[in-house]
Length: 232
Image (cartoon, rainbow, N blue to C red; front, side, top):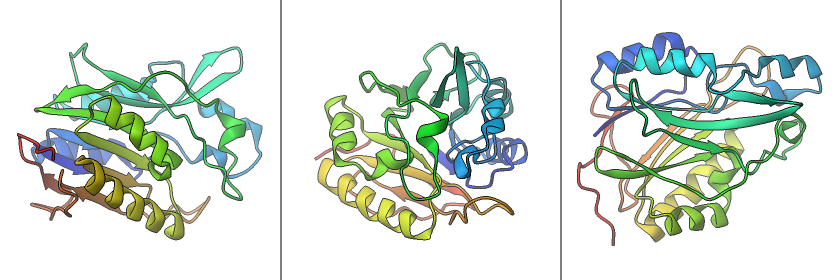
């Protein structure tokens, strides 16, 4: 499987480029289709949320042109109920995955708990090119109990999306490397790139084999994973 890790928030350009490059799976960062709405207390940011499934998500799937897309739209179920949704799917497929972020970020200057409700429910996976894929969003990548839940669900590949400043991204990478090695799960994680306004996100990507080893880009932004993942 060829996976494209895209930290650039200009998704309408990046997604078709990744598809043209031959990616089987395209991974976008946290809040894939909007600005980072939780950097201040401006309630007008609620208007960024879309009814599920997000129209921007559907557009992203179209641009992926048959490749799988992993993204996290900001969605509203109505009646003041908002979620950060993790979605994994592809054009024409009914075998899609939905995960609501369970741990909104609580760092200073991050008001995620104000803007969306923690999700709940059991972890599920979907099969992508021989891998059992599960999603992780934001602070979940730094919580060992969230990793344990993925292990119990039988995940062999974790696709993560984050919006971390440099110090948090360093911690995210360190924990993901340890969890990958301990549990024999491959990891693909994409961190949100810096933007002119809002928090100074660090950008960056992480690609680990099922043995916890760093993968090297086979072409810019593209990482190759074995079609038959090995678990210890």
